[in-house]
Image 1 (cartoon, rainbow, N blue to C red):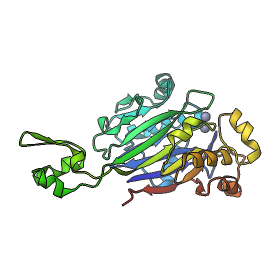
Image 2: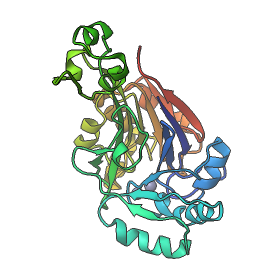
Image 3: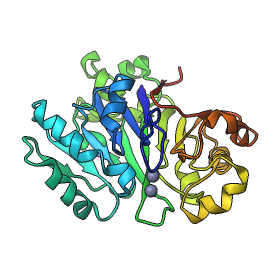
Image 4: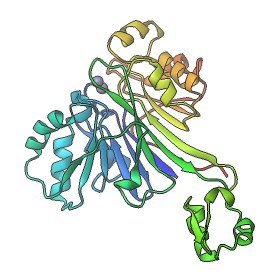
Length: 308
Ligand SMILES: [Zn+2]
Ligand SMILES: [Zn+2]
């Protein structure tokens, strides 16, 4: 199960009713905050989520509207007595980008650990114990004038466990759990592999956050078959496709085209320009291309569940 909260949907500057674009993901008792612009703390409060125990902050790029909330958040964590380390990841240049932000945050009683996400993704339980279902965070390159990336969070799900097969192989019941988790066990000097007692792998869960990006193949490939995608939709009008591309963004239609090409289940639009007063007025520009589009709004929540 993955809980997603869209904390904000604005671009460039926070507005009274629209915080800067940021997503809070929680799963298995851990949480990841994607981007942290000015006002993200207030947005989280409004949405009813606590950022204090956030385990990891994943930055898509270092434009101010995605990072200027960091010093304030770190300072609050410190004053609330945080002791656990905080993992931070981002595209190339992370150390340089963090330096001034950490200077502003001042002395912190907890450790900041920068994380490199390898090709193929980071198995999250290697840094954060307790993540299950092979929870993985992967990145993909986006097109946004500066070094930038989007994120893919996935849970995998092994096939159904067949106890009768395990019994036939002489596995004691006390070891069933290990096989269910995908680990091999030793029985009378012989190895029993999960594949011998599990059915075909079942569909996992996938969440994708584009950050700021123009339409690009890396986005549509990374988002393939995602259950939920939050995409850059800075511009609303179809006629703004060129200007969107020039600035490294998408309009509603392009975000919908990317979602359609990637065959995602549901698309949430976000990162609206302040010129868009009411995103709902333009929703048809996306829906005519991809029906399952929702105008993201601050505080919107969704729980992604495994199919039975
Ligand atoms: Zn932005
Ligand atoms: Zn940007």
